[in-house]
Length: 159
Image (cartoon, rainbow, N blue to C red; front, side):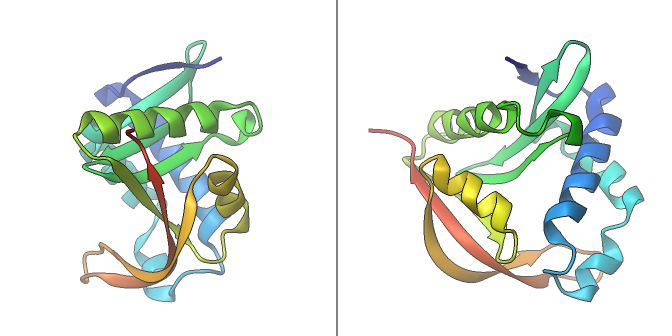
């Protein structure tokens, strides 16, 4: 089982690489070109460094195996490195995200999944999350928000 801990500034390069690779796996072919143009490898590096305070990492030995970012009641990012997919790391991270949302004082967590990312959607559904329907997620970019066709998923996190 992986070990969970708050991210440290030195984790940002590993988080950026996992995020970039995973984001491309789940998003290519399912997002507007305007967002693809600004989601460069370098952009993930700067975003990972800026988001250390919102990030929990899962480690396997000395290696960052995955991470989750939670803000308020939103589970913003859940990614696992290619070499650790299928090992249970994602489920551990998702459970931690649910715990963090509850610790933030919310009874219900939510997240957005790109509509075409069938693998992620099945994962969330297997873990008790409900598809609450389509919506456009406004992804931040230097040129302004980019609407991305997504599905909103939700889950009760407190009794």
